[in-house]
Length: 128
Image 1 (cartoon, rainbow, N blue to C red):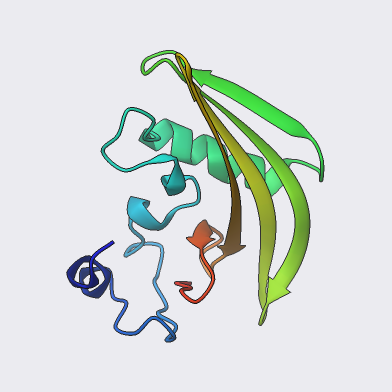
Image 2 (tube, helix red, strand yellow; image 1 turned 45 degrees about the horizontal axis):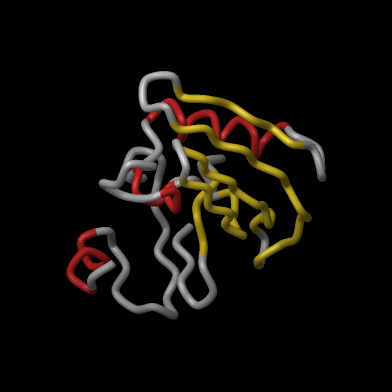
């Protein structure tokens, strides 16, 4: 992601926190966006919503699978563990993406922002 795009999203420094209200939250930040942006495996809005639901309701170690019949992409989420980042609840999870002969497994992290949305985080850059 370019610095210009980060500035557009409100990130002015990699080490700074940016607080985003639910009205300002971009789908680019929601957990699941790591499936790809403008790629064959990109999550649709309904896939991102499904990811939010899974991260909020599934127990540790439970496998949750769904197939987006419109795109032909299958996703599976397994929650590994919970932790805190400051006063934000967070979790580590594994996202498996399958489309035709393509399979990719990603180890990811997300924290719940003040609006109750799971937001993707990466080491060194957190937007809540």
